[in-house]
Structures are given as structure tokens and as C-alpha cells.
Length: 123
Image (cartoon, rainbow, N blue to C red; front, side, top):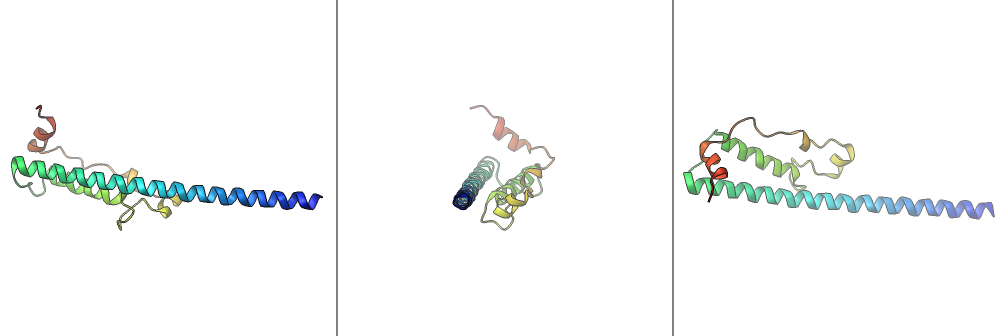
């Protein structure tokens, strides 16, 4: 009878291990889908900012704080996008807790006056 209980316990532990492994896979899928969605939102927002500035002020000044911000924001979208080569939203990064995404900060510059008017104007 002791052997039967041991075998049942072994099977119960194996079922538990498989269940937990499946839950981790589903959670990883969930995180990747969120990261992908957020990367698309950021890209759309950055494009909208660029379009609004170009519409109201013309071309974006090369090497301006706005251009630096646009570059930085696109890099953040790439870091979130699981399909991007520079993504930190991969299973391996999460497993090894080495995602660089949260260690990044925006450029230490102020926005161009045109950009500032776009975000502070009152309609």
C-alpha cells in the first residue's frame, strides 16, 4: 500500500509541475502580447507627434532636442517589441532578469519651443 501512495504522490507532483509550466508559458505569451501592443502604441504616438510638429512648424530640426526625443522614443518601442532585434521583451531576458528596458531614461534635454507649444497649448 505504501508503494501505491508513493506512485500517486509522484503523479500528483508531475501534474502540478506540468500545470505550473503551462501557466508560465501562458504568462510569457501574455507579457509578449502586451509588449508588442505597447510598442505599436508608442510608434503610433511618435508618428502623430512628428506629423503634428511638421504640420505646424515644418521640418524637424536635425540634432534638436525633439529629434533626440523621437529617436529615443522609437528605441523604447523597439525594446518593447518582441519581433525587434533590440527587444528586451524575450523569454530569455525575462528568465534571466536582464531586461535593460527599465534601466533607460529619456535624453536629458528640454523640448524645442515648438514642441513645447504643441503640448501646452490650450484649445
